[in-house]
Length: 89
Image (cartoon, rainbow, N blue to C red; front, side):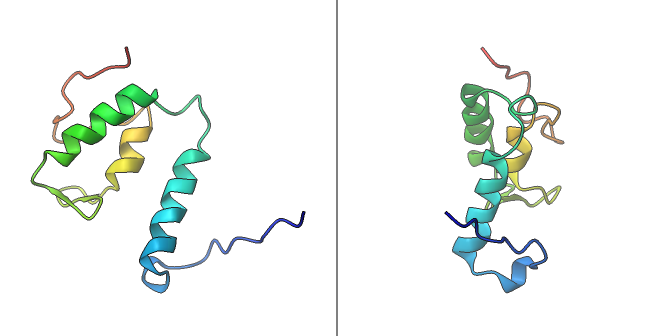
């Protein structure tokens, strides 16, 4: 099976919205497992972001991050401490 070549030089404004968000989700899925938090913590972080007034279309209006990407990485924290001390486990 031939592997498709993926364009890595597209601007988000040039992508349709579905392709753009699929690209983000694929990127998160392909991250090294050593770098990612466990699924329960990821979901807890996202649930806290969904309650936040600063969330708009998947982005934090205060810091500009994509919350799904920020929430996926162990090293990251909410810059406004909204995640508190939620941990894996």
